[in-house]
Length: 619
Image 1 (cartoon, rainbow, N blue to C red):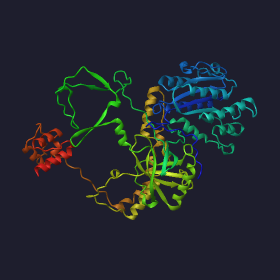
Image 2: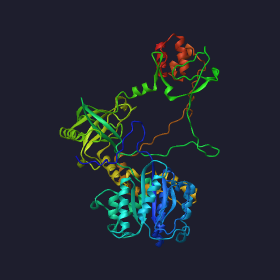
Image 3: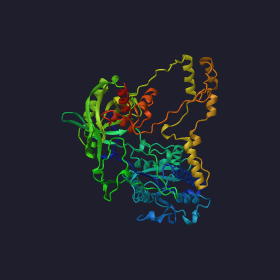
Image 4: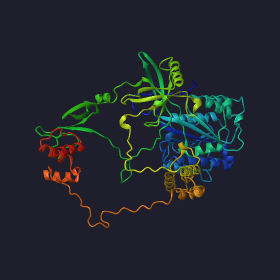
């Protein structure tokens, strides 16, 4: 069984929370020596500007900072309050402290990108400094931001491939700082801004230590792809291998192993919708409070299901108190009586089993229909930190399932307050698929109520001729486009965001909307010759006539059924509605009142069942 690197796992909590939630922080570290080549300096700031603008609307909670290294002076940054307890190292300068992007901060950076760059040679200057001190400054900014961070990234722009000679003191400091970045889980990206950049002189060893790999395994990144990913923050994929849940897998009496559950895909985090006050666009804070009110004795309150009690019928009492969540009760009407359940009892009913996995048995691989999709599949791998020897037993079970072509059927409860699910464990091998590893793929099995029946009665099924199938196969091949699904975004949404940003900052900003859309004219040219043969095979298209409205060309318009306003309808009215099959226009109160008048009991039911009782009464 191949090793699956999960050294970055974190202990999962039993509550329903996102364990790895947090904000993303990015610090752009720019070498001031780039100013000697004004074109490279301008290209660097252009990449940073595109990165800031690209995630301004969709990733507004990210923390962004801009720091210069190899400067002679250290002028004050934009906001000094963000630099409390942070000492700026010599020969470094902070342009933008680590903070959420706002319109004011964005306008400040756009003003900096003017041709004079705030008189950069005099205000900042250029002088050899220490990259290790600049990295220490960036890491201190991450620690002092005051928020939980999910990812921390330093993006370094430079055109110098050998900042220090091998064996010098600064060379050793940088290598030590590379080890610190690996230990503190800080990512470091290098973007060379010049051609013919040689990684072998210094950065090959430095980046190998940051990435915790052997120096022989280091591969030079693609500069164009790196610029594309940095310029658009919506394309960045900083997710890491992390265990979602640590569970105990019960195989039998007194036989348990510990396993870890991983997700194949990361859920897309969308910005939360907020309510704004119409007058000044201020954010409205909503707070829900439950209150109890005493009602005078002698008043009868109708507490039947699906009916609201009007507070105007009962005088309000001055005695009011807040109701704690633990004091709430869940009320269900069973057999005509109200049955109360506490919050603890409701949680027990929802999750009758303790968190973990239990083996139920084995099935042949052919007996499981994996096309019945219920939930995205997960991955199961052993975990030695809870129970020693779990990997040995897990491997033996995995090998036997592959040898005999079996799948394990289990019941899983990933955490508390979650109902159990039945799963099938499909053994996978890394050699069979690029995305799979040696372990078990978790396939969630559907319940009976999750199957839907497709009623094809009344539809004529037309079988396509073989020539028609071949033509549409050609059309499908000609319309194929190259794209990466996990970075494809909505082109229309991109254009809207570009218009918003352009009008807000009075700049010309082009999003990726046009680049994501296929070339429709080119597609039409590709399939033009193939489409000409469609008429010969399928014939002419049928002309569908427009349906006439009830009043168009008909002698009489359809009469509208009048609603019954009486609280209790008469027998004649019910019979008229029965003949027209329009009993559904009656309300629940009217149906209950009519049935109570006819001495029918058991009325704490839904409206369709009340209509059935009325039909039975008249049958």
